Amino acid sequence: MKKYYKLIIFLLLLACVDDSAHGPYGSDNIPPGMVTIDDVINTPGGAIIYFTPPADDDLLYVKASFSDENQIDREVIVSSVIDSLNIVGFAEQGDYPVEVVAVDRGENESEAVVINISPLEAPIHAILNSMVGSQDFGGINIAYQNPTRAEVSLNMSTIDEDGNIVFRESFYTSQADSYYSFRGYDPIPTVFIIYVEDKWGNQTATRSFEITPLEDIFLDKAFWAIESMPGDESFSEYGFTANQIWDGYWSNQWNCGHTNFLPLPHQLTLDLGQVAKLNRFKLYQRGGSELYKHGNPKRFEIYGRLNLDNLPIYDPDDPGDGWIFLGYFESFKPSGLPPGSNTAEDYEFQDNGEDFVFDFEAQQHEIRFIRFVNIESWNNQMVTVIGELSFWGSLIN
Image 1 (cartoon, rainbow, N blue to C red):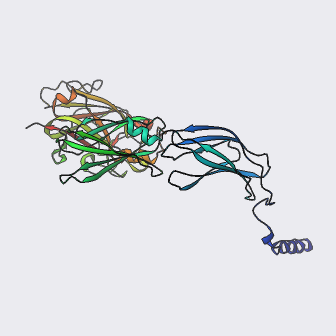
Image 2 (image 1 turned 180 degrees about the vertical axis):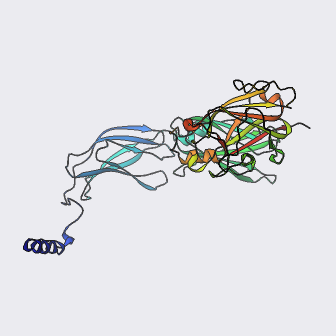
């Protein structure tokens, strides 16, 4: 027992030691050596500073301090095992001083090395200058180039009848070469005003495009119904119902049409209850934790017919026999990450609905009945789920 008493007394003595003399781990009040700058590569909106850290054993990190063109102080910190500092977020070109220091485990800072960086044209300006606006269904299509994959928003306003500029919508993206359609506008001459903003709050000037949108009428879903046909799968399984495909709700994982688990392809036939020449459609995935997996369509085909007269006998090897082929489509995932890993951009992209446009030939047909054939689901699962479908076009009286 005596040795245990000695241990307890020893621990109590340790507890009584004055900690005020102890700073952070390894604190010796001796600053580390200076950072050696090896190279500076100016980049769009910033620069990459390559360096060699000092050889101090207690080195913790390297820090760059600078002020942007708005005199906002900023820092970039990297581990001592990294050999570069990525300086980003400048909106304007110019020469900017950057202080680089080494910091040890005792939070001692080395003497600063001051260098100048000269950022190239910021991504927001290059994106704005690359924009091409064109007439689209219900609005304007903006094509743009974003080679650095900067995280930006395209912000659109219009001019109202009183001449006031009214903000309408923002679209967030980090895609390289892409496009986006701002929709929901009548087929009358409209001025669309657009600027680009990055995640640091830097904004460009505006660009204006005067466009007359093409007619784009939303097909009222009050007339929709399932048209059960040979070869169709039930989308009312596992407590879900097929009419959830057109009930106007899609943002959670408990509102969708759901098949049984069976080998693909899976097909669904819809009666739109109205005749139209179709422009486009939106597919909304089953959301929540099921986004980009668990039966959400990845590759699929759309067929159409004006009526169901004189259909040939159904051939499971050719589900489009007797139908008009309207298009083959593939779902897109902005992040490119594997199923189960999604970014905020992925969620926003799907919550807005994935927009698909029929080609010119498909737009010429008068259509009432739609056949949706799912060829492949995300994550290769043998099931199909659809959060919501919507169609737009020109109604035929």
